[in-house]
Image: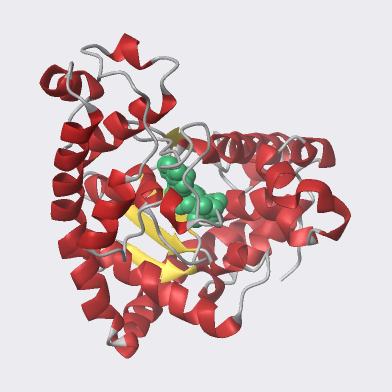
Length: 342
Ligand code: TYM
């Protein structure tokens, strides 16, 4: 009914980490073989909390470099930064008028990010999920690879698509669409590392905003720093179990095994077949080697690409043009459906 395509986004807010890499970017790489893929650096989302303008520029290019260094082909797929394609902001406004306050009030990420300072949070931070729905639906994308933390936002995107299709049903039919205008986008949340946890607390998500850098492995960390962080990662006193059921109530062990499995493109079961009964010290040594062997070539390539910002800008500009070619006709239809003259 809808042509299958993939859309996903990453915020250029600094410190891309192993969670972003395993939860999202490796999936982006894998999907490019089977789908038409659009990967967006969401700078409009980034400014929902304060960003230093120079750092925002640097971080935008760094995410572009990380995409390419990880293996996303910018010719085959579309890579661009969100602010270059105004359809995102325009559709987001329309969705601000479709989504309900009650829906957004339930978003746990807003509650976490705004914390006790809700009154002082930007309006953009509250409306953030509407822009995310617009990102996806501006391309009528059907599949969205994300980490587990974005699941609730994806459900909201589906609710918005559904309500738009229902509210404007007659107008959508009159425009020649028999089965609704927007697809209900499906989240792709798969594999052993959909929620990579902090190295210092297995109950907390690995995050860019965590103050201590020892809680995460950044894509720009060198081998020595990776080794230090893994060696100091929190564990428990028991040896590793032989079966996945034995990871229950052991969040730190579960997290490290999940990371190992994802890096190895294998499963927790298989990793435990090799390491069941081992002490953490032996396992951590192997984890360091594996992490370094996977990340080192990417880090080197990110640095190389980063030394030529003009080349990255060219890639983003070319991607934005291709993105506009898809999004603008869709936005034109939306405007007609809503009843805007022009
Ligand atoms: P962002 O920039 O916070 O994260 C980018 C991607 O990384 C995933 N991720 C994780 N996965 C596993 N473990 C973790 N600890 C971890 N931390 C982050 C996120 O789930 C995400 O897939 N709102 C989005 C960006 C966005 C978007 C979109 C995504 C904007 N528009 C449209 C999909 C479709 C965000 O803040 O991701």
